Amino acid sequence: MRGLNKGNRNTLAAGTTAVAGLAAFGLLVAGCDSDGTGARDAGAARSAAETRSPVPQPSGTGQSAVAAKRVDAAALIKGDPKVSTAVKRELKTCGGSEYPIDVSYGTLTNSGSPDVVVNLMTCSDAMGVATYVYREESGTYKNVFAAEEPPVYSEIDRGDLVVTKQQYAKGDAMGYSSSEDVITYHWAAGKFTETDSVHTDFSKAVSSGDGTATSAPTTDN
Image (tube, rainbow, N blue to C red; front, side):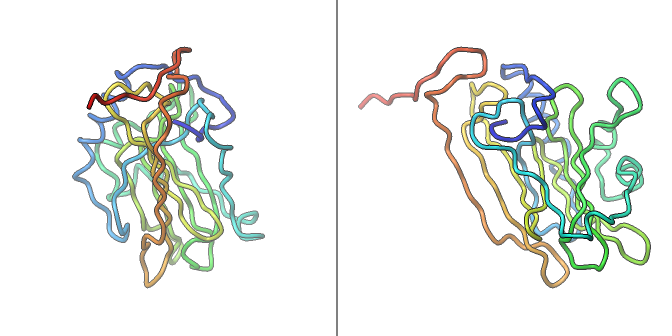
């Protein structure tokens, strides 16, 4: 994906095979819903191709993030009835005991306790499989947002939830999508509501991911 990765820890393989696999997985989980999400999202997570913008850093809110009680994110996903069977089936460790999960803590729902943003990824290329927001209520965590149509990745930005997703066209190489949507949600009246959406169409006159350059398609009159 353009502009979203974690320190270039993985190198994405170019080609459309991986994209097709993600699309197939998205079809498996697209029918699953979760209360309080406000919307369902399909999109991209992080990628080794940081050709567009610096990596947005998840941010908490002052001391609340620092003092956050750490959670077992894998256990949250496994025990959450709102998480689809397809996602749970993809929840596997990466050759050891570590799960491919990013966890952010910060203020989103003003519950008095830090909220938890969980991003589940693939082991091979850190592609976002699903993302969730958990709100602490009476000592337990409730799923208040879910996006299970990969690739997708969420972050906390100054009290709002920002969901980034890439759009692939036929022939796009992995990591070089045709466009990107960045959607902002704000918590109000007990749910997340979309407050902003930015769509970006990427130039075709850049590297395609395999070391070659591509140019914008032309249309005959």
